[in-house]
Picture (cartoon, one colour):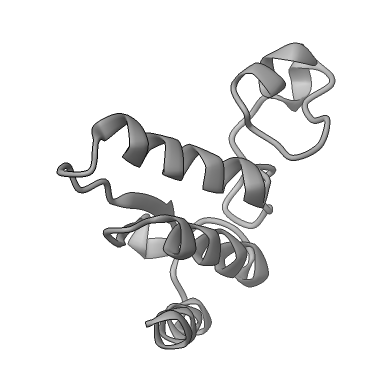
Length: 107
């Protein structure tokens, strides 16, 4: 179980030591994926697609505000073509404000 997260580049640190740890986080739990791992996957997807194919990152609205903002920041910085936000029903006014702050800071 310890080698699969490394092989799939799911985390920046050792993660998922037991089978019970393999689950999708609940809407109020932080996502275990690391910033560097997420960024590498986004860059690799664009590289694999080639420069003429736009790759849009898919971010989701799950998680606490700080976790959502962290993942959104990585997605925004790593994607050359922009992103989609999925699970819109999980966005709050605070999360929408974070979207605006990240966009205006990076744009």
